[in-house]
Image (cartoon, rainbow, N blue to C red):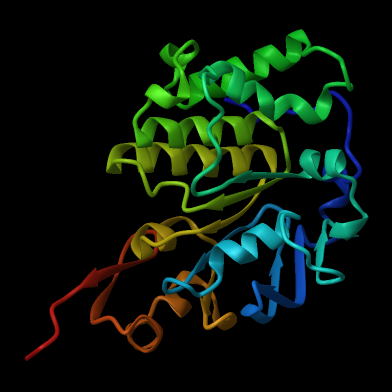
Amino acid sequence: MPAARPADGGAVRSSDAAAVAAVEVRDLHVRLDGTPILAGVDLTVAAGEWVTVIGPNGAGKSTLLRAVGGLLPASGAVSLFGTPSEALRRRDRARVVATVAQSPVVPAGMSVFDYVLLGRTPYIAPLGRESTADLAAAHEVLDGLDLAGFHDRELATLSGGERQRVFLARALAQGATLLLLDEPISALDIGHQQEVLELVDRLRREHGLTVLATMHDLSIAGEYADRMVLLAEGRVVAAGTPREVLTEQLLATWYRATVRVVDGDHGPLVVPIRPRR
């Protein structure tokens, strides 16, 4: 299933991606309701790379993704494919960045197909209608995510796992070059977790997508990420390959967890163990 592509280029073209980072975050500070959440975060994601941000609850992972996606003010701190985020108009940003949030708003009474079709909004003229290509893109991603029989179902009638796949389908239909995935598999069973992540990885390799994700499941995160960033107390405390970040010492320090790290075929596997009494 190829990733949906816009009929015309946005403000940032994929051909520019080879020369610049897909995401550049420098000294990002975010305060919410007066409380500091991020305190000087630096992050670089190369074009075509998969970077997963991990960290304990409250570390600021979702806040970081929201800032990168333009949903939180981050004046001068975030650039996308070499362009300062605040310089991008909303429609242009939507052609570059697609986000799958943890708990998206589900419009009342909306069908699965109509929801996925919303991903094509950046390519539809104001007061215009979707094209045949837009409809085909929506059908294509639904088929690729094993949702072919869900077109006319209302979103509200779906299980949590089914909804999560629909949320991803909308993001893929958007045809953006950067995917922001905030806990994309948290509501899925293990089979669909693998299907979704394999699909994202295949699209990344075949179509040059860049992925910035957050995940709680450390073993799965280590299986798919090229690099990992460990966020704690609002700052980056470790970054590198999965084998460099997923160490027993780092996880004990920042998660306060007793684990055993076992080397696997595609990355380290993190096994929780009961602490000795």
